[in-house]
Image (cartoon, rainbow, N blue to C red; front, side, top):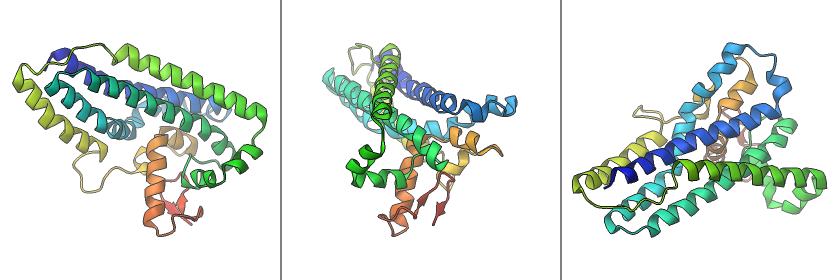
Length: 248
């Protein structure tokens, strides 16, 4: 495998970490008045405390790309890298939508986007009717801008037109054997007995900093999983209220 292809994979992972910090900046900026008076030391810790969940989420997002990179290497076909670009760009758009949708959710419920909010999509017409034309317009524009910034970031960092090569074979085999395993370890947060949880991002007595440090995508996935496991997947009162714990 050419070193440039390996570097491209690594840079794509790092691009996710940077993009998550960008989405976090959006959340903090939206709630600037609430965080402005908080201790500077705790604010400076925010991006570092967030890395744990961000890394796990990035590993989730790299699960399909690692297979596409392996296929590209052994087939020496660029089509798999092209598919990876479209797949990753699609995820960027989804994360951008979650980021912007979360802002009014926090204003209303003082919590992160969770299963309760998603369950409202069962009646999308109701959601649209409760939002003003101005809110829908600015929200759509914000999603487009954030998505464009994210895709631009990935294009500059990771989406390079690099011809995949099998040789040297030992690099290709090493990547194919090790990368999926490392991704699997990363998405569960390490080798400890209990996998990573939302509450692992909490570090402050100020709840908004804990919520800001919580990766929105990870929180939503965790909320839906806990809601399903509770045996009440269709009742909004059984969900994660942004606290990292299942509540009624």
